[in-house]
Image (cartoon, rainbow, N blue to C red; front, side):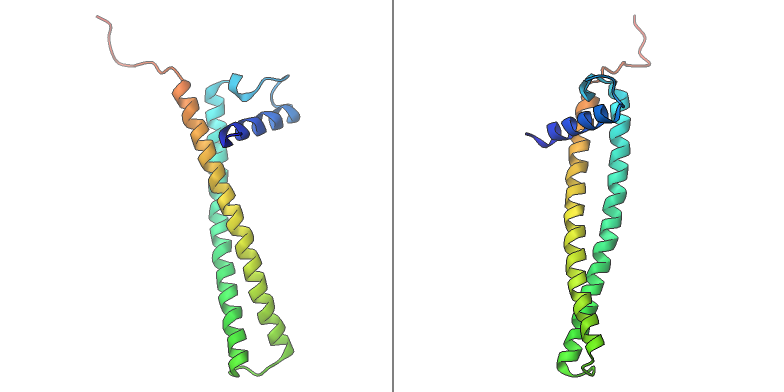
Length: 138
């Protein structure tokens, strides 16, 4: 199933389940203007998700680098081998890896969802019959 059809089907099923759409009317039968507004709102929310994921990815890279540097300093002998320091550095490295992977996958999923929503929005805009304003009939 193409991603756009999946997004449309997911929204239709969620809307019917939540009672937002009366009966079994799918979003293709709704007013395109309302659908475009809904898609633009969804795109804005996903853009905020992407921004927060980028911040979390940066924080996880910093934690990973700091943990790695501390672990290297313990191995080289620059820092005394203390169990608390060793556990903290290992936790920072593992936590950085996990946070990086999780936020990277969420970032990719949100970017894919934005592309699908923008494509669907463009299709809806193309279906609207615009009227030319300002030309006089002679």
